Amino acid sequence: MLKKLLGLAPTLEPDGSYSPSKVALRFGTVDKTDFEPISYPQYSGPKSKVLVMFTEQKNMTMQNGKLFSTGNHPVEALLPMLHLKNAGFDFEIATPTGKPVVFEMWAMPTQDKHVMEFYNAYKSQFEAPKSLETIASDLPDADSYAAVFIPGGHGAMLGIPEDKNVGQLLHWAHDNDLFTITICHGPGSLLATTLNGQDFIYDGYKMAVFPDSVDKQAPMMGYLPGHMPWALGEKLTALGVNIVNAKLDDTTQLDRNLITGASPLAANALGKLAANTLLDALNT
Image (cartoon, rainbow, N blue to C red):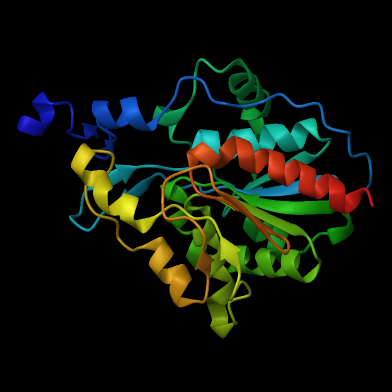
């Protein structure tokens, strides 16, 4: 009751899940982002596609059994895509089975003209994406692709790390020297490369990842309705990852063909890094 009076209680949604509290939304989300509409030299070569792998799941079961209303974080998805679009790249949008992309709509920056225009332009593709299962069953010609991108949001930890098709497509990207871009909780997808007894292909890599320490504190201000089912950073570290950030900040990291960002605060910087890195690599 005290948490509710103070605005710290998570908000109950009609389906029985919980979205962040009023206080958490005030401090943890924005109406307008720091997106910079940069004029990049346009890429016009054959490797113009970016495969974007979204989650199609909404609810995460916390340790106490409560459901967190999550999905893909809109800022972490749309800002990097905006930069890549402005650099001349386009997107193949997919979810594990072709169900609609799920966004954390409570984090949508509704007063951001650039973000909302982009979201509305791709809304039909978000609602009817391709299936990763179909794509993985008949792997496309890598010569048409520049990168794969896995946005963040806690939803990236739902189903994606256990999806054999995600693992296959990440191996496909790695083996064909495509770039892999991911942010916040999105690096959870990289765990899929270990399925079927395979070695973790990012052993020894430096990555920016959402800190476990922040997830542990999140229930205190009602961002999460309970403690996380598992710790992302802990799992990655055990596999040999060197996490370069300790805080929820704008850290980005480029290590070989892997581009990562720490949190929503890094979405703009990640987009710029990804766009410039792809242009530098493909225009040489």
